[in-house]
Length: 366
Image (cartoon, rainbow, N blue to C red; front, side, top):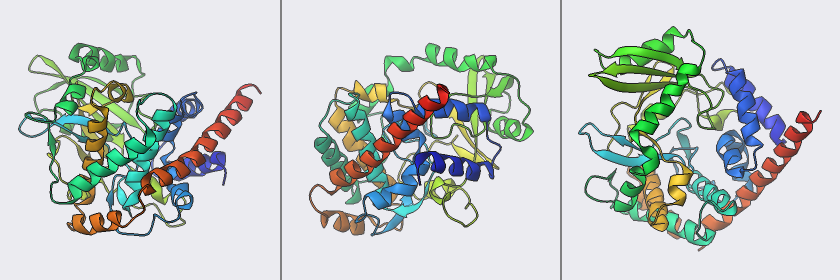
């Protein structure tokens, strides 16, 4: 199946779960055809789910674990836990599912390959894979703990406090949603109001557009309110089953977010939750994802990649406490298995990206 057919069939499958935003899909298709293959990679997890096992035929065997699914370099961010502490970790579980344990690691390493190929990351690919895997193994073998940034993890705290996350700039950008047309989605509004402080005064309820890549097309809304004299915000994004099932003839399965987060090692975000048909989260200057530009300028890049691997293990070890079993399995694999697997599937997706660009250019030029 070619990338264009896969995209059409996936979007038809998704459209049977939620009412898709046609203008956001047009925008997504254009972004997938940009000169940045990392954006294509982020926007096509459905294609990854279809081809990664075929591209890496020796890896799907092994334990099934609760997985992130759509893991990549920009699927990490920060939030505040119930004690107000700043926490770093994986912050998007839209595609969570029970998957072969290697899926998350190979996808994370593949995202690094795309970032390295385009010059966004200054590190050798072999070193990046080795560092990610070392971090993963470190947290499989009894040392797993959440990444709370108050007293340690200086390398992560430096990214979290990057000047581009200035609160004034954050609220200026978020308030730009007021330019969006008014919407009428009482279910989304009700979910957002339940997530806001009880005495907060709602000022804005709008669509949130051109955000992210993988979820473009799904309904997404933002509510901004005034609470104790300052702004607070919540986002609601349509809840769907994981894209790993789109090419299955069976009906879509329910979201796996709740059960995945119930079995992970982390200091949870108390305001990240599902509510009916929505994923609801807090939006704030230091409660958001960290972009590749933050990572590319990290003074201790290797330590950050090590932490990304370790945080991946924090998710996997929640599956029946299987850290020791997974560690034994990983140690038995050939030395450069991660590098080789990620390279194979990355080249498949790179060909898809080039084909997509040609098709979009032909369509644009008539």
